[in-house]
Length: 231
Image (tube, rainbow, N blue to C red; front, side, top):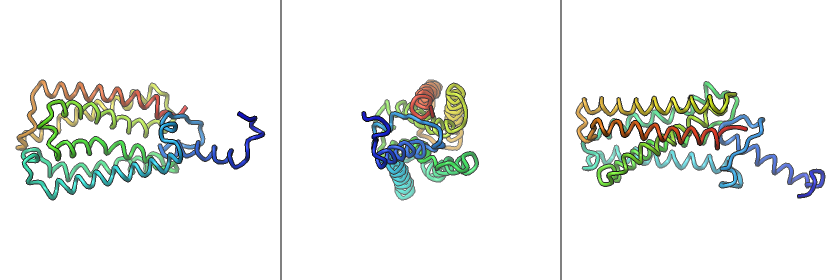
């Protein structure tokens, strides 16, 4: 490559702009240097692409919520408390905005974390709408593993914007993943006690779900300290 003094000014400005867009779209302060392999995969203006991805995720989520509300009488929804899910799942839309408002003041909005948080809810709604939980035996296990990987990755994007070591961030998000996995199983048990009949909860199922949720949390923590951690 040519020496730095021979690089045209407009190319240098474009390079600085591209580097700055990478941390901005993840919710990091753009001042510290930052490297992430996603930039090589996405290329171009990463900020715009992550924003569009966030919008796409929200459209899919709201579409599934509308489908559940309008078609709650479908047989695959029977006995699963889908109306309750359709009412409570949208609360997840508030997590990233509130975190940004109260903990990341003056920093770019965390579009990637906002999108990642919603993916587990999309997977649950879509899996029930397509009747995958009842027709594919492995889908429930797959969903618990992948959903917690996405969820913990979202936590990782948020907490990596603080001045914490990799180990501290990994332990925080791993703990959050483990706690939310336990809370999910408690919520399923309470739903069963209130009359939801098609959750098919057993001791083996609960232990398996907790184990897969923990393993997914480990993957999310590893992604945090490798892909989403500011260098």
